[in-house]
Image 1 (cartoon, rainbow, N blue to C red):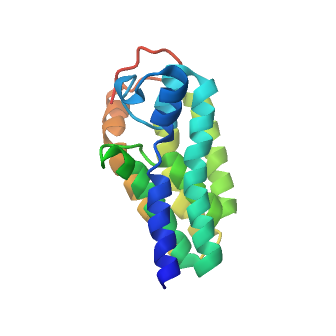
Image 2 (cartoon, rainbow, N blue to C red):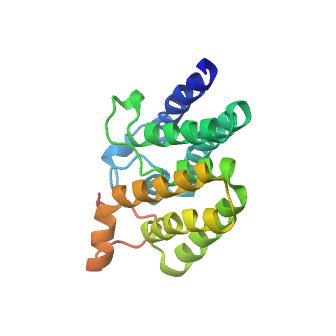
Image 3 (cartoon, one colour):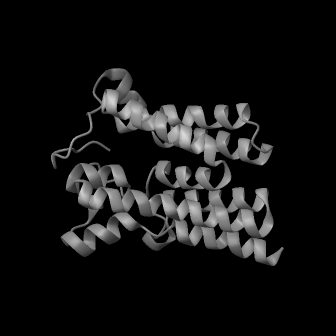
Length: 202
């Protein structure tokens, strides 16, 4: 029980590592929170600085969800994996290392957790994200549709019910954190993805 709790706490601490600000600060000497949308996640990093920093941040944000969830799954079973993964997502959204200030929107970290808990649904969701993004060039729309698909795929493919509950909670969290993007999508004002530094939406 103590070991399980430590894994969950460790998940939060790992999830709190702000790879966007760390890599941007290290290689560009700037604060990503003062650039583009101000978000610390991979989408904003890629939009502002391109794929040379966007891809590493995305992979690290995925890893910080995958590693705690897999560790919890192997050490304590499905529930510990779910709780450790959820803790990593919470850390990404409200990182202790940034004094609980606004973090990322959890999409990449949720993807990492999903790959640990339900690799087949996660792989299908990755394909959905890629197709929607290529067709429409809206990272937010791709993320939202992927979030909708995850619990459905987990349920249809017979994943354990703790994982289905996690996927459902992740869907709600992603929608909540993207509520401004949803408004802009409905209004037709959501900017399409680009590498230009001029993006100022939040």
